[in-house]
Image (cartoon, rainbow, N blue to C red):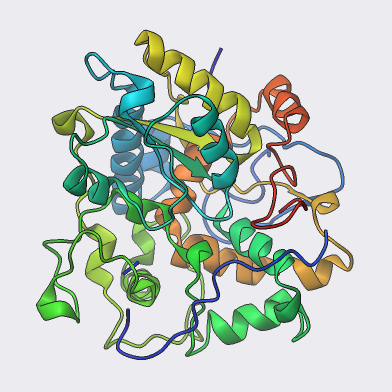
Length: 379
């Protein structure tokens, strides 16, 4: 079976809203590069998106864009395939907690499976675990979800934010404006695998300890600064970010190219788990790791496609709880371009309908996992 796998404190006070109590409960979508369309469908499921070989990718994208995507995907595939010697899943595996992506579900499953390192801590990264745990973990699982959907899930849970208007209004004021929202839902997934200790930063004497990941505005503004200068090196160039506020004294574009953990050197394996098939993918990864069978990542490379949005997962009116296409594009591909590349690669290929149904039946997909501190589902 093919497994669909899958804070840096600023110099001024910024809102860290954290978690809220829940208020209530393709075929390529556009061209391979350039402006993309998100299709809103009432039916569950996605059409098969465009997948490219390396040669097709270099012909479709600029060389620099192809190189960045290829390098990131090759890194992830290598990390997914490694079989650490004498791996004991219960002893050696650690669950990374990506807020808004089903991390509570994965924590519960890891705990029920007897993982001694099972913890639900959004601030723990691969780097912090390798540096601070003795012996260090040799196996990690991480949840992947469309970045915009993570913000939508947060907004859906925050009734007090909803009273101030629509998600788009909040996003344009608090994410594109001068007071960025820096909750756990805005942690880029890729930061969990980058080592910032040698990167020049505008605080802490030019460097940052691996565990210091609470200055997320430096990452967010840094990513947009980098995109303004290097957008043609991403899968989706040409997004207008001219109206996005950036504090260039705090933004740290160098973080975009901070080195990724060398899984081969450290002999660690990473299971990339997609939100759409979270439960069965976790079970398949754990089973494979226990018997020492390597995972087979998706073949080919994903090029600039987007998920089909299922309107049944949004409260009414959907215009209040859903990001506009423009804002979705800015967040996914200008703020979170590396996260989106990983999500496209692992999660937007051929969808195993049986896995999706199994996941939904187990309460792990779509709106299936529970919001923090509530008995209500979180989108």
